[in-house]
Image (cartoon, rainbow over all chains, first blue to last red):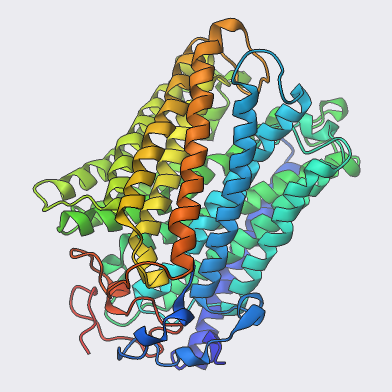
Length: 45
Length: 544
């Protein structure tokens, strides 16, 4: 079976580029999560 | 639902559709190790259908209890558990995963991509849902029963509950992680994997609405995760974020929750807008009126959703200036929403319309969702909202938006795209029965709730005075009819389609439908667009 990541249109560059954008958005999500705590713990409420 | 492998005769006669359906895995491995976006889409849809039925059973228990005054079937504690879990299961288990299922199935096909950007993470996102769903449902069997503080899990109620609250929090964390991974997948797929010749401004509206929804999810799901983590630390680790006994502030939880909660409302409705924007042009046989304004209206709704959370909290002692700000900001959302409604109507205007089931649900959506939108405006007015806060008027309002809005759009989308998914046409007669049965029973259920709310009946109460008896009886009868309508849908529409019963679906079952999904055979082959297709100038047709 050919998995989608092995398919012709998913070249190495494409996968690398996907990973880069994915990591950026993953980091944004993490910043929002940590940010909620930072807002409450460091600055008080 | 995916009958792809069951119709080998349909495969292999299209240059761009996958030519290797015979590579498709079989048996349980196909589903457990699934990396194919169509299979994962099917899994999401089946999961959400199961949760819809479970949440529906809870709703019917609630309505059975409320059929007449007094306590008949459940005690007040269990009643509160039922309302809480009905909300959590429907929001996090049914509506959100269902739209992710639609996204998985349709986005790669609509943009000419071979699959989602992160196929293995896609599998992980789905399979996280199962333990989370099991955890949520299992809380009913824990000491003290399921969480009963309402789907909004307000402190300090959540700080006082039994161990089931911890399990529910863990379940919500997992659901949130799944949603974030799903959103990242969708954003990267849309931004980075569109076929050449498909700029963003030529993308189908469903992809646009999901792109914006995915941004919303990434912004707000971590906020919910933060809020429930703080609840957890308040419960077990001696912090006092929300615990007044330790100097915390329960209203703070409401601020954080609704900063997530209001965008969440749009997370549940924007993909619905996308589905309707696909269906109305197809059955009016016209281009979507005001495509660009639709994109900007959707973006405006998303941006505005971050500055209106306070309208859920008018009775918490907000200063007047704050009330005015949130009131006007909320009313501002009516502008882009109206742009969308007017555009759908303008698309239909002088179109060659026919009313097959997808169009019936789409028109039903526009009509009934608009009613929910208008009652939303009424709730947005601070002086009015202070009167109707936590009454059945609000229950009626959000069910008009979420049932007649999100759920109807899903039904519309199912009838529209299921020929492509399953390779068979549904029965038009059964589809129409499902539509009219649902439309009438939905209104019988929820319209009387406006009167109950205006008369002062509070939500989340197991019992009520005699003055509310008649409308409650009507609502309960309507609810059971609505529930049976959905059972009819599952038994006589979905299951036959999964078994491949019905007329074989042509490649393009709808005369006026445009888009790449109608350029591939029905059912969609296991792999599609392994080599990027060449598109025409409109980016809706394959030219080579």
